[in-house]
Length: 163
Image (cartoon, rainbow, N blue to C red):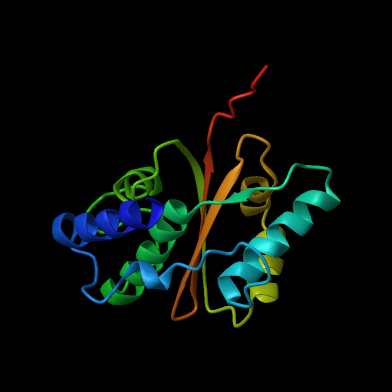
């Protein structure tokens, strides 16, 4: 079911938002284990940083990852670097378009870093980016990477506590 939602979200983005034509859900890793991709390495480092500060870990979210990847790709293909897409969409707009059904909370972008460690060092050295990474109001994350353009999108899903 989740794969179908991702496929539909990617198709909607391609049809409605003018995303690059060759982006598929295959570009979004699952990051649930020992995946060796650079995107999943960023995810693991985020949770290591959060653990070091006593903050709960973030869960991986494929829709946020799709939104992050599509924004990284759009920035490269359209030649800009900004949180707002050239058509005015915000990270929240892009997250919802990618099928995210909870509350988008924030976004970090970076360009040029050659490794997950470099990009995480850059973000952790910047107060605003660090705050996004360590925010207790987020409990999900997606990470995207396209041609050394890195994007993290944070979200919050209300957790249902069963009695």
